[in-house]
Length: 142
Image 1 (spheres, rainbow, N blue to C red):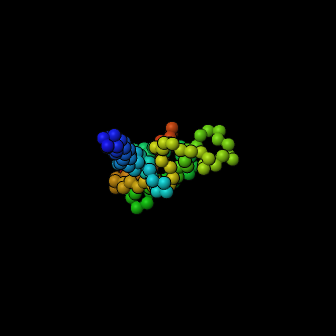
Image 2 (image 1 turned 90 degrees about the horizontal axis):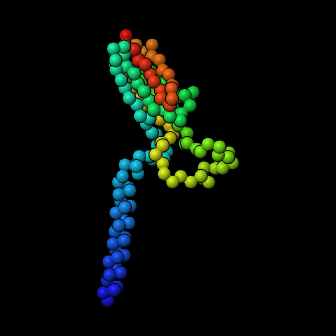
Image 3 (image 1 turned 180 degrees about the vertical axis):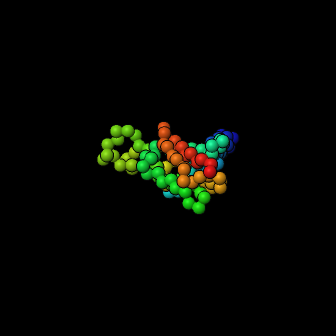
């Protein structure tokens, strides 16, 4: 009888440990970070100096030709889409269903970022340059 109780305790302990790891995984930051089918937001920084404001957006892996940057109603709007990263030299015939993903932190899909502009910005002189995966937007003062 004691043997059966001891085995039951070990089974319960094993199951409790697996359940704890499962719950920890669900509550972790990485589990909730990406939700397929939803828009993601590229990280941005906004700086200010004597000449105006400088916005930088992390757009690694995005072709700058597909980025839409515009000003509407005193708001800077940045819109685009990042394709899922794929290993280089992957044969075209290999479908995404045959490529198994084991860990994912790089988000992809459509995005839109809006930034309210201060009134002292000269919207007619806004300039943007894409360099090393970063989009730099210079917004000079009037």
